[in-house]
Each structure stands twice: as structure tokens, then as C-alpha cells.
Figure 1 (cartoon, rainbow, N blue to C red):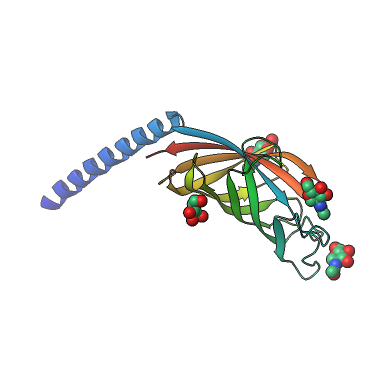
Figure 2 (cartoon, rainbow, N blue to C red; figure 1 turned 180 degrees about the vertical axis):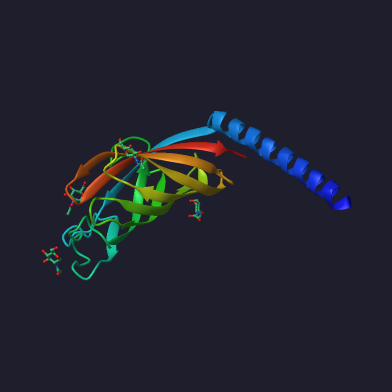
Length: 187
Ligand SMILES: *[C@@H]1O[C@H](CO)[C@@H](O)[C@H](O)[C@H]1NC(C)=O
Ligand SMILES: *[C@@H]1O[C@H](CO)[C@@H](O)[C@H](O)[C@H]1NC(C)=O
Ligand SMILES: *[C@@H]1O[C@H](CO)[C@@H](O)[C@H](O)[C@H]1NC(C)=O
Ligand SMILES: *[C@@H]1O[C@H](CO)[C@@H](O)[C@H](O)[C@H]1NC(C)=O
């Protein structure tokens, strides 16, 4: 008798918890971003000739490649570390407002796709702090979403989604990404 009562109480509790979390989920989906930021960043990959201008370098390559040129097989296995300027418009020569720092690694042999882990680091009058990003980047797609997993300073506890668009690329030396950041948690 006692145990049936307990089970009943537990069952009711479970029902309440699950219905309230479902309601929460619905509310989250309907939410609009609390902050939206659009930036560009520019990556110039070292290719053996552009040491002065390069902002990124291949730091690891598979056995069939080297660290001077991106490997065949969709660059599979290459790891690139970058320290790229961030600008407000799509001009590489605009005054940078921060740096995009981190790495990407190519992780599929059949097509160009990468995994990104990096931070936007700001130290200007407009923005101070950092925004941290991580996620898969199927870069043949016009737009890709990656996670905004955190932030510091002006972006304390930031969470959201960043939509990446390849704004331009020149061979395997230069590319420019447009990053449309939508934060759903702002403090
Ligand atoms: C480096 O950048 C400057 C200025 O944009 C450009 O004139 C020069 O051609 C570049 N050099 C290399 C090696 O890419
Ligand atoms: C790197 O590999 C490329 C081919 O992928 C080749 O053309 C180049 O000579 C290699 N460079 C070095 C320094 O081994
Ligand atoms: C940010 O900029 C200020 C003023 O230029 C400088 O004193 C400070 O060291 C910088 N901080 C970082 C983390 O670069
Ligand atoms: C990539 O684009 C295709 C078609 O445009 C879409 O179906 C797919 O969901 C996209 N994938 C990602 C990860 O954005």
C-alpha cells in the first residue's frame, strides 16, 4: 500500500517535471536573439612564399602531405592554427577590431569539411572580452551554424549560434568569413 502511494507520487512528480521542461523548450525555441553581431575575419594561409602576410599556418599534416601546402583528399588531416584580423566590413585592410584565434582541422576525405575551435578576442573601446566558438563547418554549404559556447568580459556567459558564410576565397591562400552571431543568452 505504502509503496504504491510512493510510486504514484513519483509518477506525478515526473509528469510535472516533464511538462514544465517541455514548456521551457517551447519558450526557448520562440525566443529571439538578445544580441546580434556581424563581423568578418580574414585568413591568409602560409604557403611557403607569404610569410610576411600570412595569418595562419598548417601545423600538422597527414603522411601524404606537408606543412607548406594543404594536402590532397580534401585536405583531410591538416590542422591549421590562425590569428586572423576581425573587421566590421569585408575589407581586409580595414582597421581590425579584434583577432580571431584558434584552429581548424579538415576531417573528411570525400569533401571539404572542417571542425572549428576558436575565440574572437576584443580589446578595444567598443568591445572588451572574448566570444568562444566550436563546431562542425561543412564549408561547401553556403551557410553553416556553429555554437557560441561562451564568452568573457562584454560577452560574459554568452551563448548562441553563429552562422558562417564564406564571403570570398582566393585559391588556397585567402578566405574571408562573414560571421553572423546571434546570442540567446546575454547578461
Ligand atoms: C602582402 O600584403 C601587401 C598589402 O596588402 C601586398 O601588397 C603584398 O603583395 C602581399 N604580399 C604577399 C607576399 O602576399
Ligand atoms: C608539399 O607538397 C606539395 C604537394 O602537395 C609539393 O608540391 C611541395 O613541393 C611539398 N613541399 C615540401 C616543402 O615538401
Ligand atoms: C588591452 O589594451 C590595453 C590598452 O591598450 C592594454 O593595456 C592591455 O594590456 C590590453 N589587454 C590585453 C589582454 O591585450
Ligand atoms: C547544408 O546544406 C544543405 C543543402 O543546402 C542542407 O540540407 C544541410 O542541412 C546543410 N547542412 C548544414 C550542416 O548546415
